[in-house]
Length: 256
Image 1 (cartoon, rainbow, N blue to C red):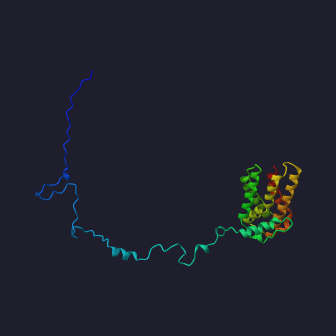
Image 2 (cartoon, rainbow, N blue to C red):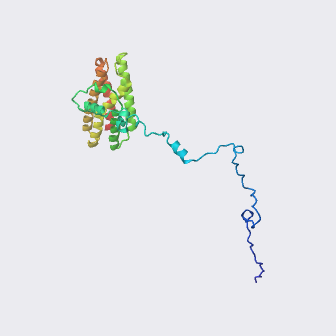
Image 3 (cartoon, helix red, strand yellow):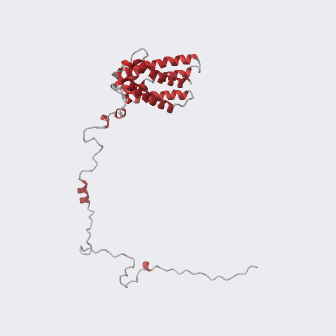
């Protein structure tokens, strides 16, 4: 049986905080609260810091000064963004020159113009190697790293062979130009990689077509190397054999 306990009533008396109480009338000014900060004196002796004026006229006079930012760069000098060169030109990629070099190699019976390839670049060779790797990828082979590595090793090989044959008479053939020539002469191998997608695997037709494209690349590369070097005509046969070995490796990469 529960026992009941009497609970006295709780009465809340309203109280006003000390800092909010209003003084009775006639009692005089209320004392300053203890936490209130002292007001600064208006005299210059008591306040050594100058008072900052927020006058509207002074602000308008200061805004009449010339702005720090006078617009986009080059506007004052008479140039604009329309006069800027294209991005490919700033990167050193000459698409018209790449197209001319490609057309000079693309015709199998026409001799390539060595004067076009005197100005070496790596944009066209990189494009051809990328296309070669993409066609190999369509055939189920991932050979991007192998292609780039083989082209580098082949360029070093041809440069070393030609340097040994010509001795000190290397002409204008340097390693950079050699890489450019090997890359541009990969164009027949790129075409062979695309044609091989429609040919039967492992047949004699594949080997015959591959040999034609190898001879095409070898002929073009040998002519360019011999023309761009001062003593290339003296060892044209040996240079052709080295080029044939290089492009034969790429044809075997396509066939197998």
